[in-house]
Length: 49
Image 1 (cartoon, rainbow, N blue to C red):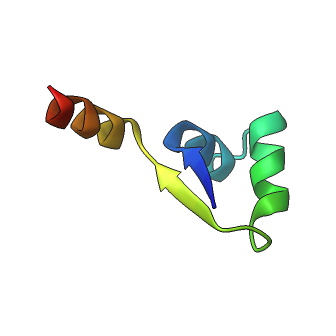
Image 2: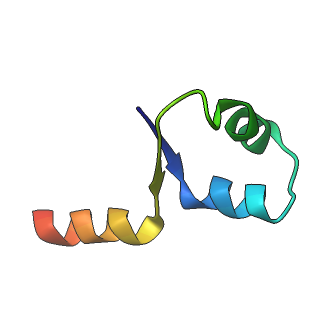
Image 3: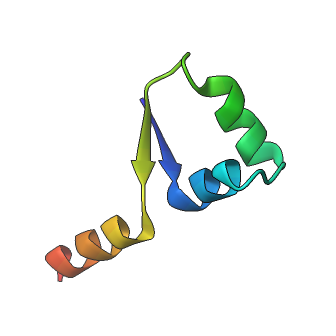
């Protein structure tokens, strides 16, 4: 299982070509991928406080 930040997904769906979006394109359908957003990180930070 691989966690992919929302910034990579946004770049991928907007047609941005970089090492991260290339990797995501190749991994889709081959690995279990989870979307992680900055908001989720913020929620985790708040719950730990």
